[in-house]
Structures are given as C-alpha cells and as structure tokens.
Length: 505
Image (cartoon, rainbow, N blue to C red; front, side, top):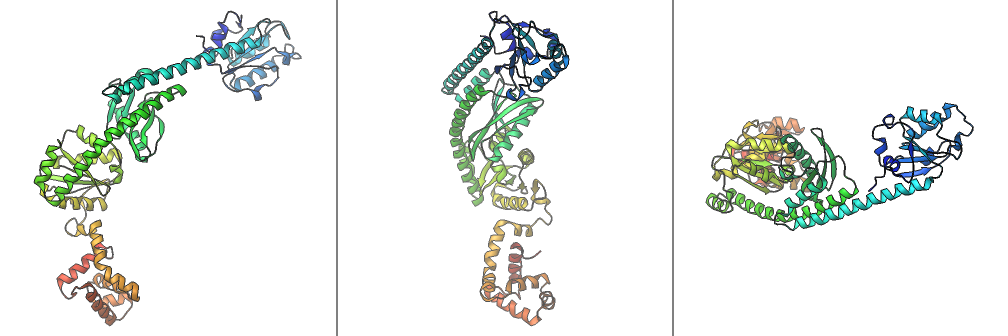
C-alpha cells in the first residue's frame, strides 16, 4: 500500500515525476511527511487559501514577467514555507520549458522539496493518487481498530479478564500499559516495563486525578517518558487510572482505548462490590472495639482473614481527602502488617501496631490531607484512642499530628473535640435560649466571670455593669443550668462547657 507522502508520489512510475533538487538538500523527513491534500494554483500569493500539510502544484504563469530575476521566486518560496507547505511541484511546458533555475535556488535556500511535473501528467492525477493513498491508510486503520476491539472483547471473557484486556491492549499498541491508583500499580504489561521511580510518580498523578472525582484524561512526562492517563469509572465513582506509555494517540488508538476503559471500569465496579462488603465488615469490627467487645471483634476479624494487630496499638484518624483515595487498603496490604481500616463519619480510621505508626506519615505524604495519631493503647482502650486521634487531627500542628505532642495534651485537650462541643452546646442551651427570648446577657456574663477568675468586681468592669448586676445574672444562670456555682463541681461543669463551646480562651 502506497503511503500518502511526497516520496510515494515520486515513486509512482505512471506519474513520471522528477525531483528537481537533491534529496539531501531538503529538510530531514520532508519527503516522508503525510500529505493531507494536493492543491494547484498559479496565484502569486496562494497562501491565504492553503493549510499546513499540503503540497502545491503550479505552472509558473505568475512568474511570466519575472524573467531571471531571483527576487520574486525567493519571496514566493518563503511565503510557501511559512504557510507550512510540504513541497512544490512545477508543471513544465505550459508557461515555460523546464523548471526555472531561480525557483530551484529559492527552494534549495528554503530546503523545500521541488519536483518537475511533465506536460502530459495532469495535476489531477497527483491529487487522485494521493487521495487514494489517504483512503487506503484510513481503511487500514479502521480495520485495525475493529480487529483490536474484537480481540479486547475476547480477552475480557477469559478468567482473568481485566489483566488479559490490558495485555491485549499493550500488544495492539506496541507499548507499555498499566492500571494504577493512588496506592499501587494494580496491573501492567509487559511486566517491569517501567521502573519503580516511574511507578511512584504515576501513582502520584493518578491520585491527583482520582481526588478530583471527575472523568479526565491527561498527558504527563515522567523520567523523560510520555504517558497518556485516563480515569476509569463514573463521576464520583472513579476506580483507577489507565496509563499508556505514548506521546499521543490517534483516532483509531483512542477508539480501542475507549473500549478497554469501558470494559475495565465494569470489571473494577464488580471488584468494588467485594471491597464494599469488606469495608462494611471492618466498620462492624471497629464498632465492636469502640464498645469494648474485644473478643467478638477479634473473632470476626480472624474469620474474615484479616486479624487484628496485637496490643499496644495506635489509632489514626485521617480526613475525608485520604478516605476518598482508592487503593489505600491495597497499599497497606502490600506492607504485610495487620491493620484494621474502616470508615467512620466520613473519616478513615486505622488501627495498627505502635511500631507501624510511620505508615500513616507515608500515606499522608503520598496523598495529602491530615491525620491524627493517638498514644499507644490496648485494644480494650480503642475508644479512648479514637478520641485522642480525633482531637489530634482537629488541633493539627502539621500533616500528621500525634496526640502526645499537642500543647497541653491531657484531659483538657479532650474538650477541643467535636463530640465535646456538641455536648457543651446542649448544656449551655438553657442560657442561650433565655438570652434570645428575654434579651438578657447571661452567657457573656458567665463567660466574663470565669475569665476574671470568678471575681465579681473584675467581671463587672469587663462588662461595664454594676457588680450587683453580675451577681443577679449568675444567680439566674445557675438556676437555669441546675448547677451551684458556689461549689467546685458546679463551677467545673460550667467552665468545661464554656471551654468546649469555644467561649473561653
């Protein structure tokens, strides 16, 4: 099959074309570039009507009055070269005999291919020959795409359909193909086709695409090698990223890749159902540990093939960003250590051996977000560890915050958690409701009194009222709250509620 190139036209014996400049004098690859169209014109400046990837045929009537002056020829050729013309064919014996020497010199200067078209070879013959070559290439590419799609569909029916599809795609494209998520290289073909550093960088790019939650494609360069990336799955349910080692994909390549993307997404969706069942089981195990039912949790975890880590353990709570990243569980599995991971209230909770705590740092470093780590606790103390981890995450001092490193970490630190805020607001609600209904200032008065170390005069000065007003408001407040502010216990209850609600520094 002839290729749609200048060289292919020159090699057609029936056209009897002759290259008018030496082949080594034209730009490298110029004779083998794809010719999109063959156009003819005798305009002095045909460039407004031309596009890149074309060749131009002319009889030279535009040079009738130029004689041997090289300037019009040089300007003409420069215009053609700037417009992206691939080459110029000169039809002889119409306006003049032979190819003008000035035109040859101009094409040599621009390194533009120039050939002679004999009088008895019509321009339409060149256009038809190139159009036939283009049509043949298009037919061959369509046939290739249909055959490749059929082969991919057959591969999908094999026992390991997903892996077989990727292997078939790699063979058809003649390049490396991999399936990655933010945590691991799930499949690849051929095996070992990319090094560990490239895999790690592809995982990072995949994580960025998956976190966005929308279908997307991207072109990236890793270690000097170009890759085409495409997400698998639907918006909000992305599963992984297909990575292809290629600078660009033509229309037929993209058609085959689209077929693989659709089938692979279905296969991953089915596998996701199994992972969701595992996640539900893990959430149940976590709930049993929080209740203190360690024996039951251990039995269920062992029966599922994922035994609990031995005491002492640390509890980690990561925010929704890390919880949304697919493949975290598979990445942890590759480390070969027992880890209980489960989602709770939109957070990712992990329980792991104290010695394996650095895995949390590595996860956050890879995928972003924030996490809190508890102090070492026994499995029976997971509930306390969970509270510590949440407090550390909420009061974070960096990407991963350890409870033991918090300023003032201890009993009072527990007042800064979300659960404590909820309880505190409920406890103070009678005061807030009274203020709203009667226009009083009980809440700010009680807060100012505690801020003044329970000194009536100092609180009155801070509020700009008389000390008797402060006393009257405190009496009303303790009646509404049911707490005796003259006792240590009563004061502690109200102070803790104000602190947890964010009304005291």
